[in-house]
Amino acid sequence: RLLSAIPRLNQAKDHPLVPIEGTPPNLNHELKNCGFCARCPDAMNICAQQTPSLFEVSNCHFSACFKHDPRFGKR
Image 1 (cartoon, rainbow, N blue to C red):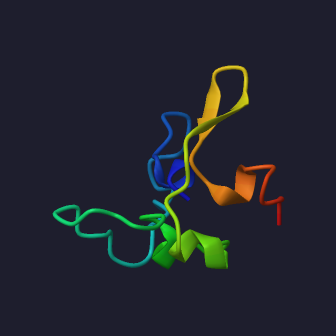
Image 2 (image 1 turned 135 degrees about the vertical axis):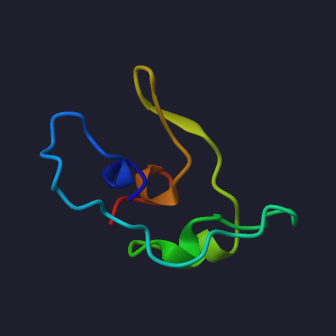
């Protein structure tokens, strides 16, 4: 979702921006879960219970998402 919300230089100027629905978490408080889970259409139960760790998906590509973590399986 975050990557799809970024405007691209090669897109037409009238191409609509893709919004991220919902409200970001309050960063004045420590996150005890995935800060994006309330706005993620692919959120799983674990997303609301734990903060995902950053791990390497492939050479120079990292993710902090349970969906991409092989320990939790892809949906």
